[in-house]
Image (cartoon, rainbow, N blue to C red; front, side, top):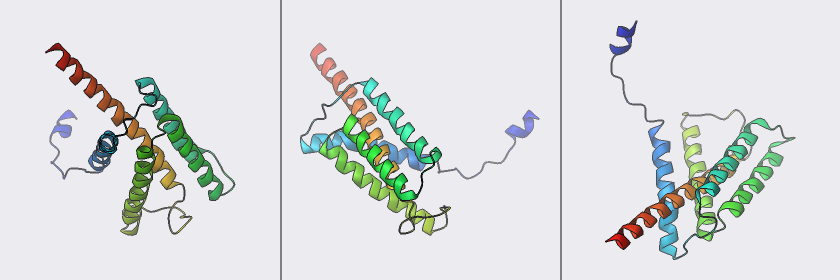
Length: 168
């Protein structure tokens, strides 16, 4: 039985996992770069426990969008929009974070629409202009979350470089 496992033919690589991972990496790197470019260092709640709480809130928002029954999609969309902006206010509060979150939500929604239009994915029932109206809220919250991870990693890198320069 094990010999069948090792004698399978090599197939084309599956890029479904690599593309989203690459996009998340770019988003995580974009936040600290924008902070430096705009001259606005992000100083609000800069510790790993805050980043992990942000991840937990994002998972909660994502889970709520799938599991909580709302009367209609407008109520769901407005609730998720308020929760997503609350996530930004609680864990980020920067203009660059808000702008990048909006930009990421817009671009990710366009990409998902392109994939739906070309038949790669399909919605069970689109709400507004053939889009699931809650989708940009999830992308916004995800962008803020990944941006906080990227900022924390960049802060750790800057701290290590500063310590090495002091040792020399």
